[in-house]
Image (cartoon, rainbow, N blue to C red; front, side, top):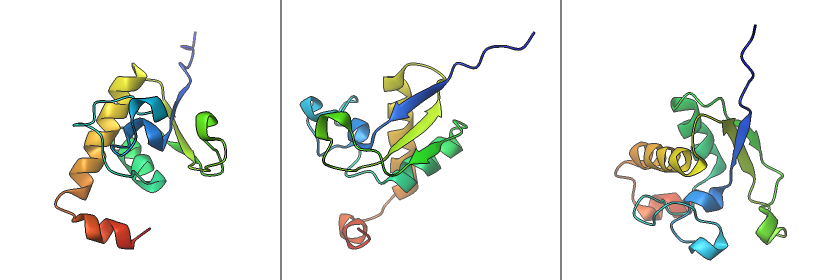
Length: 107
């Protein structure tokens, strides 16, 4: 008998965005969050963590339906807050010593 797939978790960029307050959707501590995470960074970090990411760039976070931020669906392998934190830390590692000015020019 096959095991039932646990499904997917939705990871919105707001969940790990250091610039957003908790009331705007951030679900991890500010010290673990990152500034303005991009969808491709979330996708890449999720891939490194083995979460089989699926990007949906046209989606808008329900609380801010007018802002199309996109979202990433990842395998449900534990509590959302734990997975969000792992993704944020993986992005931080990837960014490494990148200076904010470099990140700003890429937007």
